[in-house]
Image (cartoon, rainbow, N blue to C red; front, side, top):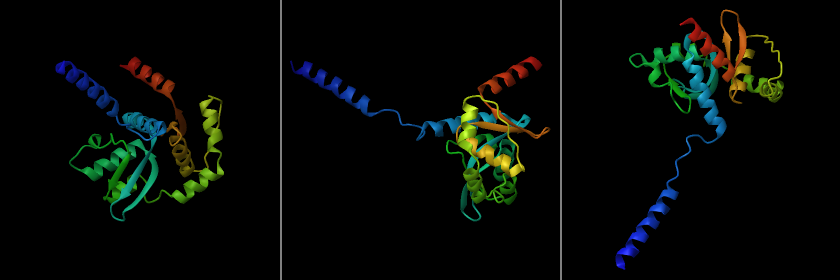
Length: 194
């Protein structure tokens, strides 16, 4: 009889401990998870397409930290300058999209010093990003024109933070919204040319 009670207790404790050890959430929100997954996809595009990624950067010379939007190639180039002996590939899969730079050329490469967060916040207040986001979600036609490159990057920054990927065809200067269909078509074109 004692053996039976011990067996039942050990099974009960096993069930309780399994329930308490739920897996940790990797991200605080679904949007954080989406932004990281989008970031990974855009980084993997490499040099054929200038995609926009939003990252958090600390300037180790001034200890200033800010969220900026830059092109995937600019980030990879800056990391190669900063790391010298390490490959950028080793630090790119960074869940917080957080990077620290001391090399001023690397910081300039990603546009850290020139990225004006006050202007970005002003831009977001003036433009109806929620309406643009809604049109993209509904796959409605849209037309964007930019007064300069900064405005294009600000649009990319705002959209990235809402889970929308974008990029620029450098030879055409054309702004492109990127979705799963875009990736599928791109992969089909690559397979066709191989």
